Image (cartoon, rainbow over all chains, first blue to last red; front, side, top):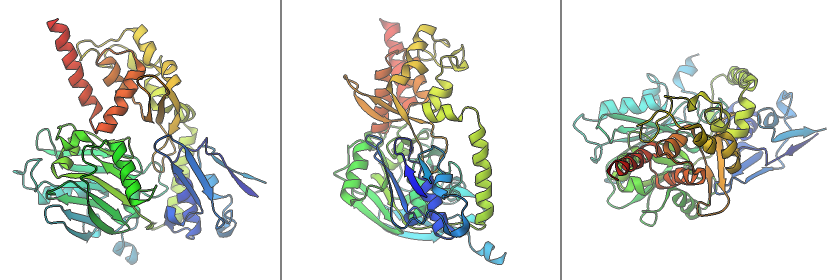
Length: 82
Length: 376
């Protein structure tokens, strides 16, 4: 399984970061700093950069049924490839 | 259960107090207030009621400028991002409240504070820099006179972090324009009640925040299932796709067939008329505005994304930035009888840069145009 991201569809709401931190803190905390994925919107031209670092475990621990960043992205900017 | 009553989950835990007159900075626990009141505005209002004499006028140094963020902000709760700004109203010295969205509120909580209470008056222009519970009052003389967009850019450059969130005043607040606003993230504006003028009267140019702390919730599983339930509801809303694509204006108020163009809904020509001609409406409603829209952008943790990104690619009105609303159309189109959409969008983004309240500024222009028509 692999994650894909599409910055063109991203609106920069950072819900993916919150969801990721929730997973990584063992369903306890919200903190974008703990997140494996980082999203940044350039306020001058709306350009969005999305990155995932090597700490991403595709939500395989904690018994998530689906990677949480994909689950909480309502704009279709993230998905999984089998 | 005992533990739950002792600790206030959802809150960052501290209230920041800054006295700009003597540069004194101290904190107090949010708990003291959170036992009785929920959220930013309630705590702000309680502090204002208890610590402010009715005799204090808005530009006095004793006046308090309070920023408050609620207990849901910084979590996955849908659309929880608002910051309440409460102070003495610059119009009538009563209590004034304004609020803004964007990313400032969440970042403030991640930096460890629920509220920021500012009193006193700085001798020179300053800005407050909050990083993970550490607070500094920095010199802002090089920022004085700069627009809100420029200020955000300069502060980020100076402090070297792209994720710093800035709430700032523009030249309007510095010059104590009574309708001046506080502008966060370039386009998220706490307008109304003249809180920008209060900030300007304190010689406070901006507040910059960056935080890496966590927000803890009491019952995470229950919380998340409530979030999921609400998200289902939003996704089933029949207009949601259109709003995400076109923004609030394009999908609702600004549609050509919207009832808002009918008689009596919008102020026309300084409120002298209540009906705008259909051929003029065509120039500024949805199919026309589409040419200048480049998708939408979202505030922190919001699944709606109602804010259009406006991009005028060339000509004298070349500009790009966030936001075009129903009341922007009132202000820069119907009120002043203007059908040039490029000029209207430019004017809207210019008021964001200057820290002016668009409704108020346009009303003054509309009144002037009305007077000109009458005397010519």
